Image (cartoon, rainbow, N blue to C red):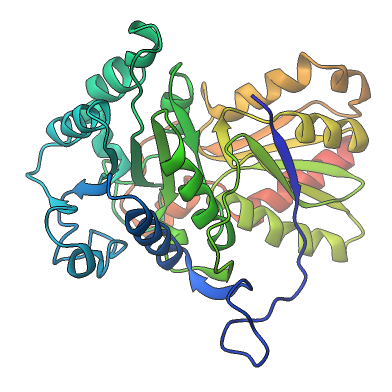
Length: 352
């Protein structure tokens, strides 16, 4: 697979409401609005695309993402389902094998536990087991992460589970600006894609291009370039790391922030190049550290020539190896926050 590297900047953009804006220029939209627009465009362009999940019809979805799609496309293409994740994903696998392009919405990513047989043993394996004679163009969208007071069974970050499975592609968009382009690419893909959306990002906003430009799966974004330290982060941790980087800049510490965006396939080259340049790597994830995804990033660094450029040991900053608590103070303390990212970065610079 050919991979692409994207360098992003913080340059200002004009919204569609401003004088002189054109249809191809970005508009300011929320993360959830950008997802809804991507689904609407895909359904308009291709009659095979449809959506299924719990309460996605008149109710508009557990987090309001499907919104008015039910009224635009009707109950045949925005299909409310019974409360059975195993049945939902099984129906989607069958529809994909029959030539449709289903988009599954799981209310909480934790509930994929009920459907792992269909995800891992069916969707991920059929193309291989049938010698390439069949494809499963299925997108499984699932909100993940803590921060909403939803407690231990509704707040997990299970991305490492999915990234471990051959045959699945795993995407974790970190901002409104890119979620639309990544989702459109996922819908186009002939393989099953697990599309993980952090719940706290739904109401965040940014400039979203008005067109239907895709962001290739398997392309890493360098969000910020610095000289002293490379921070690799995923999901909600990207924005927290960028916030920490601004604070560190005032202290004379210049930090890079790298966002893989696609966990599988992984475009590791931008990460390795940046770590080789700075000599330091801080790897930040919300999920527990034990056998977490950032352990894979650490391995890629250690197994590459970048190891010879390290000025300090690689450090991981992760959530606690514990269920997410319900109490707000304990929930906040159980996953990395801006303050803990700042502390980890400062410590790395002092120790090297």
